[in-house]
Length: 311
Image (cartoon, rainbow, N blue to C red):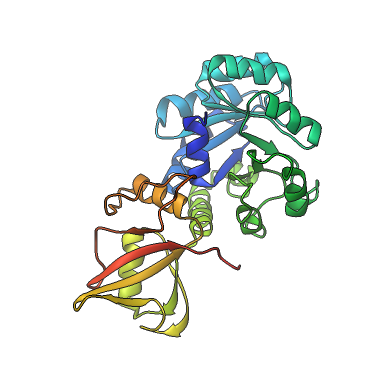
């Protein structure tokens, strides 16, 4: 059964993977990601301060889903869980680590880069695995090919992913989320440039959701909708109001906003406290056809529908 941690990761679409050298950077780093709209972090167990950093985030930024990465042994997994980790990530497939995590009832995401690894994961009952190093293994084409025999398996590709290819991966049905350090680079953390990290997290979230209008709107109306969504909207196509302006009845006007993923959009609205009309619960099995926001903008009803971005 899908764990709560895995559900949150899938709803977000991205996992920031951070290597923290100084434990005192951990809390402001987590707060920066939270401010940018991505309440999840994978702390790699590559440094002596990793456990202390993970413990601090778990204790002082409870809104964050915090996991441990680069876990190579049962001892490391045990140490991470003791510090408060809510999920475990490994670069490769270690049966002992997987079994330990399953016994503890914690989500484990082992690295799988071959049919042998995936067969082992399948026989452990895993539904989501890490695909690493994604770009060196052949990118999206290789991921599609290796995933075909494993119908129910979802992947978190990591390694070589950034703004330049994030959408290429997220467009694949097999991709649960993408992992990487493009928004939490080591130099940014060392420089304590947490404002930049917040900005990059927000840009990442904007890229994942891809809210957009296939028309041009008056600036005031576009700003009102963007403020309502708490994210910028892109617009393209014909001048207002062609294309996405619809009428329902005599007086009710509707403006349609497109998104890359309706399930992630529904989860985003829930996280941000943006009220939607009743009866739009999203599940992977039966996503809603559309989401209607309770609040209007410029007298327009706001409808959100899914349409994959071509960019």
